[in-house]
Image 1 (cartoon, rainbow, N blue to C red):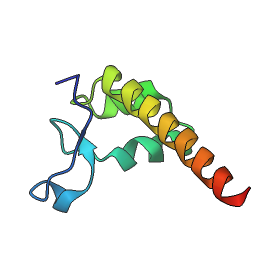
Image 2 (cartoon, rainbow, N blue to C red):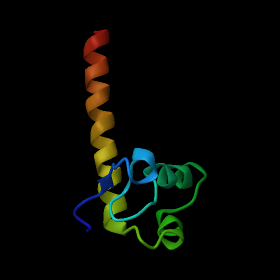
Image 3 (cartoon, rainbow, N blue to C red):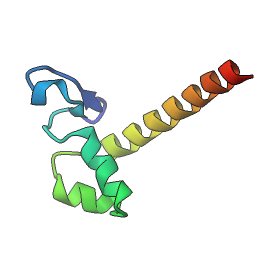
Image 4 (cartoon, rainbow, N blue to C red):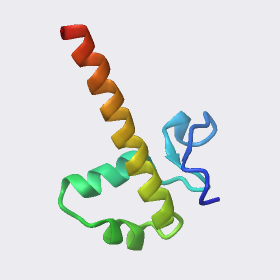
Length: 77
């Protein structure tokens, strides 16, 4: 289960992205981090999510932001 991070399924919360194997939305993690909570606090509150899943999600998010930034910069140059 730790190898898969995100699940999008219309049968689970209407297709809202969740951590694989749970009904915990990806947005929940970002909401926690936005308010200053730690990853550990999030993990304590959502025991079905593994630390490995959170780390992989943050790495994926970083790559998406970097790629998007490069594409946007190319379009404005």
